[in-house]
Image (cartoon, rainbow, N blue to C red; front, side, top):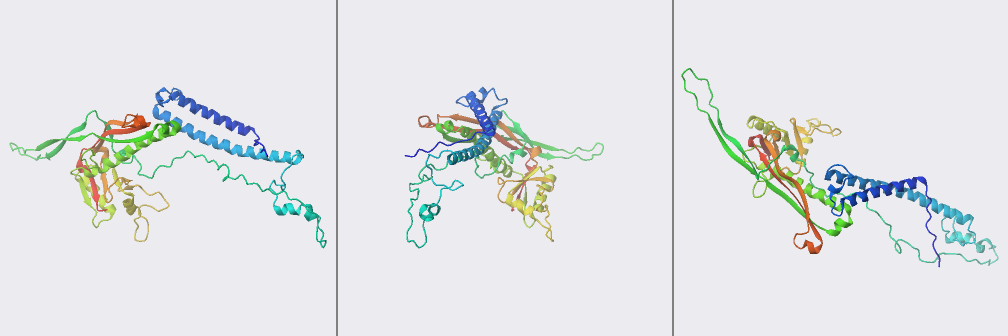
Length: 420
């Protein structure tokens, strides 16, 4: 029975230093998680300043640092193992003469059958024409090789990167809505729906002309955008990053849905009322116009009829492509040369590419002055095992929701270009 010699590693200062840094960073992360407790209550963590988001971000930075330090140690271990193997080979070649060893070449490789035969007495002692020569025994390895198929497959560690599903980024649209807060179940306001200015020059003793004003009460209901995800106890217990991943991904889903609703929500049922569905907004059909011409005509209506200044245009990437690739008759790009970053504006108004916009329309308006996202309650994330049979199945229900209302105070300050 042959006993394989233990692996030799030649330690050197750089390896020792790298291992020390890795151990220290591991301890820092372990102490922080112990401080938070099994419920990951970040309010208990006193070693890191800031709110929950700052503390979670610190945990993320520790994980990233651990990955870099582990990679550094692994690289230095490769060098240390190579040095140990070289040292062992040198000692075997020059010192351990009484220990039988396999025939090897100078570079340490096992000799082939041909090399063994050439070096044998059978080859060296043979004389041409004699018909026979001395015999020799070739030491050829016949046992099954200990390969990855018969032994361990190579161990590959995950990089730590999680590639997210390709989906629409958010927030993208709501950034242009001024955000306020409300303590009510709806946002109620008055809109001046009749304005007749009868003012005119009048002679002495003449009759004054009668003006007309009328106000109408408007209201936008606060709506709840919600989502939940079932997760097993083991997933959170065995993978520390799973909880942070879920708690970040669910709020993203809410922001993504909110981005869509404030632009194209139809206002029925529990839907928010998006810009494109507001009654009384400006409309402009593309018709035979170019896309830039049709967009300018909409802007003109918003300025001339709505007495407002457009602050953003939301348009699909495929439709903005038609604008970006416009050329003059001699082939010069109107919106800038391909080698240069093109202007993301049209007629001086920021153009926002988003697939949240309607497929064949562009939406624009004076969001800065006449739109509002009223937040009744910000994003709230809660965890419970009381849903359905989750308690006896060892599952958790993680839910997230937000309550908001989208308000467009002056409909004529907004509009849609159709037929793109």
